Length: 550
Image 1 (tube, rainbow, N blue to C red):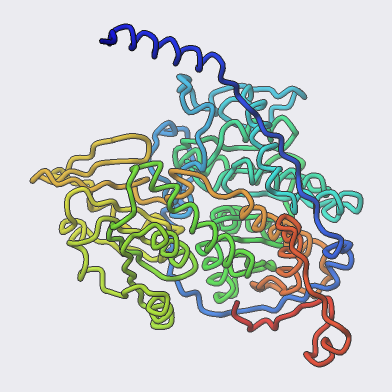
Image 2: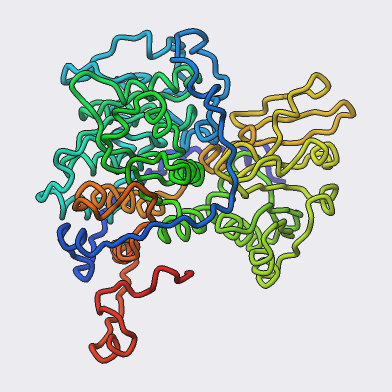
């Protein structure tokens, strides 16, 4: 008979030998180049653009925070270490898109109480820890590998400096991908000052890396609401520097300047806005006759709607749910509230993994699309006791109410993929009879008196930026669109754009798409002269009219 003890020792010895012989392998990445077919000088690009104003109704009604609440006082130091939610909807809709190297830091000192100096001796910034700049630079370099189109735009336009003289103040999520955009704007001649559009979305090491390059950044992860407005104010007001362009995400920066510094706001040459919330605010200003500068609506561009909203969410919804709950989707009953571009992406991903997917909709066209795609369209109350997961992506408020949360079964998961944090009535869950139990970062058990538990992700904020990451390549498309919109507004001759909100020119959308085709080694078919004449098109585009629905 064999000796079991001896065999066990032999197996342990063999396993130890194999572990010592293992090696770590690192792969090298190289940036893609853009095909020659998409080459165009910035002068040619600007002259080819022609935007048309639009006052189409905004589908999703986003409620304003009352001016009395939002702008009644200048931020003070009081309570600035509190992690209470910002009074701005758009500033509290998500957490960071990636874990920060400084998340685990024991330093609880507010950045506003620190005196920090970068390697160039500069002090015009406020970040968590300037010493983390090296880590942030590595994050930015990784992002650059999958943003080859934006890097290509930077290289080909760098010599022309189309943004020379532009002083851009920005309020966006500060991540590695955004840093690539900011450094592109600087390379094209702009001076930039930047703050975060969300109190939880800043990657601290990336903010430090930007500061080391000379960009004035005022942002850190975990700001209080007082910190949030203080950072915006520091970006806008500094001695000897006055902004002439705005890049906004959510409209907080635009409205802060409009309310607090109207004289500075009137001198702005253009606003570029990428979010549903911010665009809605701009249309309200325009409708009231109070918008005194031209604004570009990036949110409704084809390259934003079809790629950032659809394809990005198709991947990131699964990533966010897996990282937070380890849930298996096969056989799970899921209801997706809203079948716009975000909802379409979520439903497609869940269906592919074997989930039983229901859809709720108010729009008969979107509802019919869902039916034709094989989904059952229901009212939420019809399935609320059955479903395992609820995902909201409407942009509306109180899509999931307390009454509906009370009727959900034990162990259900509730999360939001919409822009605002208003879709799930989270406030109604903060009552004495319910117990909140933190499971891990951005994952909470809400426990009812009878012992029922509902898993709430990111406190109802944007799931993919809260609990996982979003694909860098998709952000490259959006960032390239933003850069071109800034170039267009800044260089447009007087009179081309009036005090109104404009959709992106079709030519700009097509150009952004063409820059990204090289990544896939895609080759466009070219029209012959006869074909172009037959269709009544220019051989170089645009290839679709403004009313075309992709």
